[in-house]
Length: 185
Picture (cartoon, one colour):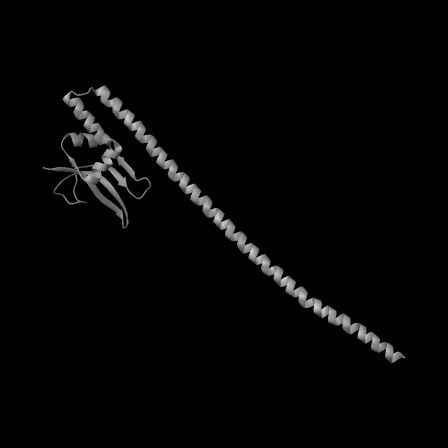
């Protein structure tokens, strides 16, 4: 019986989440499986990969063949490197302590890279949020300036309309007093 380590899809439409399963190669994709060893969520940034590394390594050493996608995930998690080092120990090329030291060094380096990526993504989101806030503030200020300019124009127009009316009433008042003086004489 050929055994595969592969993905089984679950989740809703366009928001897939996958289970990493050990299954017979003849079984359908989402059908019967032997064991579930983890999950994979490509919807997060960076993608969430949760795999039981010890079980995956045991299945690999027993002859299970990973699909291309699962092989990439296992490499990302260090399971393929651990398998390579374990085969070296079995053949007598290196000791178990040397293999463990190499794996720990690789794991520390990988964790720092992942943390750096998460920090960079967080900083990028913060920068985008700040730029959006600044753009919104500038747009609101432009709207306020436009409203104030319209109000100033309306006040100026009202003052200009009142000024000729006042001048006309002042001109009419002296003429009326002049007529009144002529009538008295």
